Length: 174
Image 1 (spheres, helix red, strand yellow):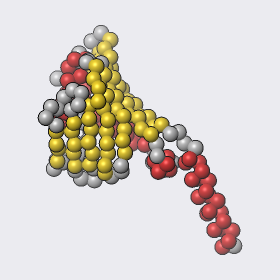
Image 2 (image 1 turned 180 degrees about the horizontal axis):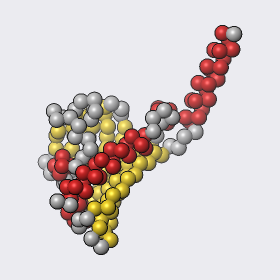
Image 3 (image 1 turned 180 degrees about the vertical axis):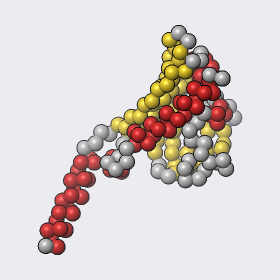
Image 4 (image 1 turned 45 degrees about the horizontal axis):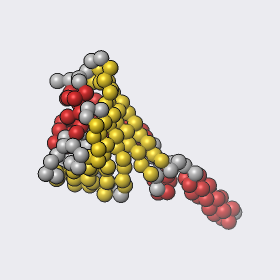
């Protein structure tokens, strides 16, 4: 009887590990919001790391240590942080900008999990409404594929994006 249970556990574990290996290599999270403000104004809040304190959903640690590069906005601007377990440690760099419609960034998470992500903020206007889309893409490692079987990463990260975009809306509409 014990052999049958052990065999069933090993078989179940093998199925989980094989299934994880079949999950997509690319991970994508995206959220959008409509804001009643001109794209140039919104672009300024996203393109300058010092402005992120007003709207970023990741300011969960009042004692967080922040380090900024000499220039805090535009291509090449760099921002690093280290905080409690809610914010971890990481750094982000603006890699390209197309004012006032797009900002590309590279995110390097160090803690709690090592990871590198490509982030794009797209900004498009239609009349007096501007749509801001926040997207993140990542190459899924096998570990993240396995983890995603138990944690809905889209829902978890997407919730943060929704919170940040809502705060950006309030900030930009003032």
